[in-house]
Amino acid sequence: MVNDSGELRVPNRLILTPGPSPLDPRVYRALSTPIVGHMDPWFSEVVSDVQTLLRQVFKTANRITLPLSASGSGGIEAAVVNPLEPGDEAIVCVNGVFSERMAVMASRIGAFVHRVECPLGMAVDPDDVRRVGRGRKIRLIGVCHGEASTGVMTSLDDFRRVANELNALLVVDAVATLVGVPLNIDRQGIDLCFSATQKAISGPPGMAPITLSPCMEEVLRARRTPVRSWYFDLTNAMNFWGEERTGQQTPSISIAFALREALRIVLEEGLEASWQRHKQNQLALIAGLEALGLRLFVTSAAERLPTVTSICVPEELEEGRIRLQLREEFGIEIAGGVGSLSGKILRVGLMGFGSQAKHVLLLLAALGKVLRDQGWGLSGGEGIKAALRFCSQTEESTTLVTN
Ligand SMILES: *Cc1c(COP(=O)(O)O)cnc(C)c1O
Image (tube, rainbow, N blue to C red; front, side, top):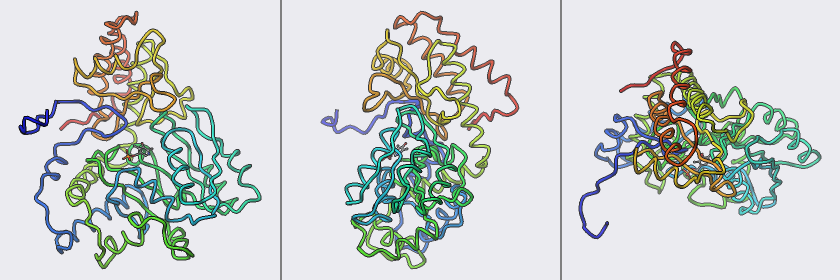
């Protein structure tokens, strides 16, 4: 395909995966803006805009709030490599692939990591964290707010209480939740939080917004050893994103342009309206999936992550074939399971520009046909009927995004 040296011809896809999300045309326009040098005073203004917008979506006054030039995994790395020093003890709540990644990264620094686990499809119990931490000197507690590998949302407030009892910092992976799910960094007392541009923010992949509380800043200043990673050393990044704009790394300039536009779109709608839209569209999707006779992987409704819905694959069906037909026939991409859930679940992401009622209806119509073609008994139209019923019941509160 590459050998013909032709221009890229990208297939037309509706991406309904847990990231990346589809982009608003305004974001594509910003992305194709000619670049300027990162030391150009004009770019400094863009940088300040992005920081101001990020503080608004994180709901924080934190001085250190910036987008790292890295994917969400770079955010996880920065979140653990900065506060932890070799020999420190940390607790990481592990309930899926991404929280597992945080535990692995923390142990590679040489920290002693206590993993507190629970069965996949559930949220870790804060009481278990309390038990493990009691009598120990725990530097930080790491929690994944939205485990996109399973579709579980963890309620953060109980973890703040436990962190207070243990005198520990609270570090939160909000890659799959920021902008899509209620989150308030200052009010919820989160010491470090990070996200990624390609999830509910609906920007292109490539940057990881991160914010540090004043307390976390103190901890970084009091470090006895240099941060183990040069690239993810936040004191380095701050040199550029701080007042002085010095520093030796070139930020992802084009993605910063796109991020600025994506955040403007979020705030034009309003954060609260965005949270509400993600919730409503997921409920419409769930109504449709259940009417198709499918079961959700996360059984507790309160623990379902509004941005990512995981569906059990019925024994008679093959997960890979369902995704293949959806992609080939309808140009819709959804995700399968990862790790031990590979082949067992399907995951639908309704994030940012992807979270629209019309996408839910289209997916349900397409999925209904695919399931019927592949021998799943029910008539394919039931899903869309149930979702429409749900939408008409909640008409006033459902925001339909149109462009
Ligand atoms: C997607 C995701 C990540 C990883 O982000 P990448 O940009 O793929 O590196 C980390 N945590 C969560 C919760 C995610 O959903």
